[in-house]
Length: 312
Image (cartoon, rainbow, N blue to C red):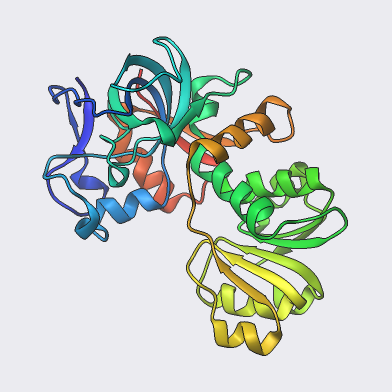
């Protein structure tokens, strides 16, 4: 079996394509998936660099990859939700007891999967698990965004940002977003109402009295976002817990989004895709033998939407 693995932590140069990797063993409650495509996420670099090694229960070599789409090849003990040949998507990240997605076959806990959207191909489906689940959790579960409200979405050209703009517009919200000049037309076509070029403008001076901010950047951007919100507004961040002292000072609610890529959220993502409310945004597709280039492009290229690795 071919798999993308590491034998030490580091930069993308440590990624290796192992053509004789062992097929993963199934635990109760898991399925064996023939992987078709894998989406690269920022968190993959935390694993690659060893920043979460204390939470990894496996020894080297480690198989990389989280988001996937593929076909059920075998059912583990106690699994009755699927049958062999079903198209599925989800996450096979090793931190959740799975075997890693960047391989021809992966063992995946059923609760980290859902039926793949019927109207999408494998490349498109692999682009959605984390970004879609994150957006649904932030906008619908936590912020509870409503029609007529105003939301600022940072990083609108990225995977999470591009999904979130579309979801927010479907709810009926007024959407502002921050991007660089090259991505202005891209986010305009997604439906953004107001666009801030972060290289030329200060969003905290241009935007006022917003109901919510969805932060995918962190650091100073998160801190400046307090200035955009009205009292009792919500700042939801993918980059950790917003400063609770500042939240109290400005009278807003600060929430850290710890994405749950589970069946409940994946089913919601599937519904949004199948209804045409949200369309996947894929920047580039790499072959599995180009995985180092794929990781470098994700790291350095500021892609619009997702970077995908095709396994088959």
